[in-house]
Image (cartoon, rainbow, N blue to C red; front, side, top):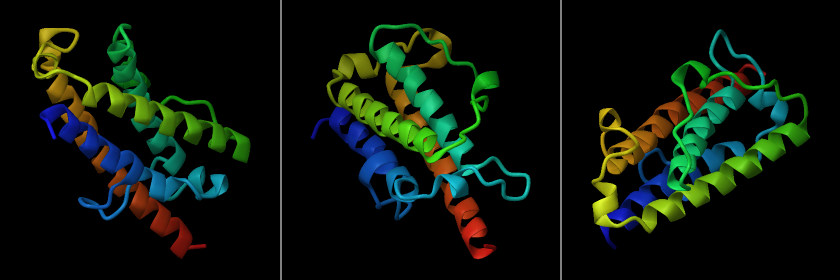
Length: 157
C-alpha cells in the first residue's frame, strides 16, 4: 500500500469503518442513532448532530478543493447549521456525510506523492498531507466527544 492509500484507509477508519484507534467510528456511532438523541442537548455541550455536521463541514470544504474548487470554509461558521427537525433531516445529513467521506477517501488514495507534499491552497495551510492528517485528528477529537455525550444521554434517560 502506498502512502496515499494508507492515509485514505486511516480516514475511512475514523469515519466509515474502523475500530483500531478508538474501537469505533462515526458510522458505527451515528447510523442507527435516533435523531432525537442526536439533537438532544446534554449539559451545555454541542449536540451530537452539531458535532457531526461540524466534521462534515470540514470534509466537504476540503473535498471542494480536491474537486478543483476554492477553499471557502471558515472556522467562524463551522458550528452554524440549520436545526434538524426530523428523522428525514438526520437521515439526509448522514447520507451526505457518508457519501462525501467516501469521495474524500477516494481522492486521497489516488493522490500522487508529489500532490500529497504540495502546497494546499496557500503556503500558510501547509501541504495536502498536513491537511488530510489534521482532518483525521480533528475527526477523532470530536468522535470522543460524541461517544461521551451519547453515553451521558443514554445513561440519564
